[in-house]
Amino acid sequence: MPRPSSPRSPGIVGADIGGSKVSAAVVDSRGRVRSHGGKALHRNEGPGEVIRDLVSVVRRSLDGGAPPRAIGVGVAGQVDPARGVVRHAPNLRWRDVPLADLLAREFGCPVLVANDVRAATVAEWRHGAGRSCQNLLCLVVGTGVGGSAVVDGRLLGGAADALGEVGHTVLVAGGRRCHCPSRGCLEAYVGGWAIAERARERVCSDPAAGAELRRRAGSIDAIEARTVGEAARGRDPLAREILRETGDYLASGVVGLVNAFNPERLLLGGGVVEGSPELVRVVSKRVRAACQPPAAEAVSVARMALGGDAILVGAAELARDRLSDASDARPAPARRAPVRERDR
Image 1 (cartoon, rainbow, N blue to C red):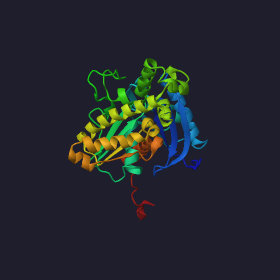
Image 2 (spheres, helix red, strand yellow; image 1 turned 135 degrees about the vertical axis):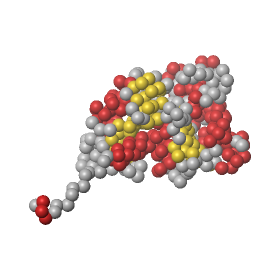
Image 3 (spheres, rainbow, N blue to C red; image 1 turned 60 degrees about the horizontal axis):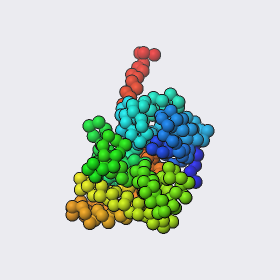
Image 4 (spheres, rainbow, N blue to C red; image 1 turned 180 degrees about the horizontal axis):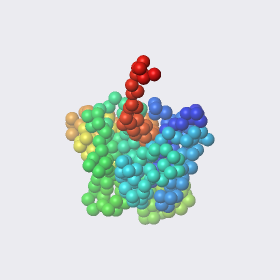
């Protein structure tokens, strides 16, 4: 059972803003969750509503204790970490949201904003299934799809700090419309929203085959990715077929990533993988069969060890790093000259 943070010991809070939920927790320097504020589902009705939900779960994570020393937030989108601005989050439909400033005013502490998958990669690299890896590739498949990489012991960032938008690499030329300006993206086939969209289409085209999915959700419009996962575990034929197709698409996309990055370990996480863990086996088998031999021989495929807390743990780590960097940058206090006898 996680222990609540002591009121006398303000902690670092890590938070996660995903395409359909927010969560937050106090995280210690070993990457352990000390007090969890739980999760809040949101309907993606604009930054104001989502940020209010986030403030609520952050306060719950503090459990009535002292204000946090700092807050780190992992966001499903492209961010400017220097300014703490969410530049573009397609599944949230956010553009240029000054998230760090808004939260800093609310809690009176430094706030760091990071891409969610970058944060998850830091967490797994330091405290999870990626420990000791010098070449690590992480792929989070949730509402959207994102990636991040450690190459030769360095976390990669990119020219605009936007490296890792692997969900928007094109899998099928001219294929399904994505939430980005393109078509045929990997995310448009394996992201949670895309699985739900494909399932609704199948139920509309074959109502008899889709009866179980419709029954579980209550209506066609209410079918979500988790509905498909639950029905598949119940051995519903249509749900199992949709997940088989999803595994096929995901594995095809991952083969290209493994060939490109040549990781020693590939970690898969996110709500879709947590709900359908058999996808890890499907991807691993395809990597062995379809990757170039050197890449296939070098890589092991596994689930993220920190599960649904990976993003908030990594965000807290990055916030802790920022505090440490700021402390190191402060000038040392001036040394007082020794008092000599004649100065007394």
